[in-house]
Length: 375
Image (cartoon, rainbow, N blue to C red; front, side, top):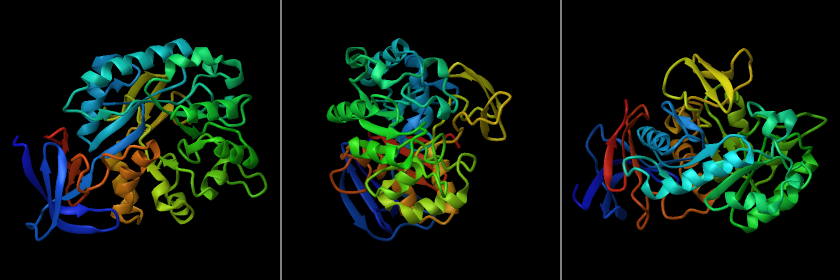
């Protein structure tokens, strides 16, 4: 492919749609030119960014380089150009091994796949009573983990879930924020006051809002209320229709600043493989009619969507397209402090996604190359 080319279509900009062309040179946007485009021209969006994803297409983020390759390629076919491979709760030694594998893989990650921005740890510092599908055997209390034991996890760690009410959690939140790690509050039995103290201590975002946390109780409000009322706090939403009723999507939209909503998939390795069963985090998980649960229970065990589906679902619920796309691109990058991509603007990386009239991915542009959708 030539180093310089144009991408024409209905451009999804920060606050509007505008017909025009994006001129790309050597992987960067050098010009954004309004103008007429042919009938049927695609929507052009910034590449999607999934900061909470455990697997895709039969590939597990906690596997080896081959699994990470496969996951990365599958995600790009769904418009995800950057992501954080996400670990589930496991023994500290296993999490260190996961971190080492991801660090070794990042420099050789496939150019025809989504780019890793580091990694995410969903655990082990979770509440035992709000653990969801995480193995209680491996949960830890921050006060009981020596700083030196956690040090091998820090290089490449971009995001971690911590229940703020656990002993030692506030100290750990402060230490990790000082090292540049974003803190996600979640899997938590925190009271409203405990949650607010957690955000004040350095909590950045909120792990899958409403799921596995204290919620909106008229007498005993919890973490979900603290997240909704704190304008600085980001919130993750799994917009698959199973994790959170769509009426609550509207509630989030009314209470949160638009730039604080993050669409995440929380997808597991079974995503994209249809109905079936697999071991996920040491538990047998069953997918039936698009709903993933621990076998024999109603406990949700992640999702089987990618961010393209989440964007479509959000738009179908009435959210304007630019806002839905921002929740899947610009907002997660801002949460991580990444500024070189995520907008259709001069100087940004040309990580772009073409969408058809139904907002399905036609193809994705990453590292100067187009990759067609899986369909």
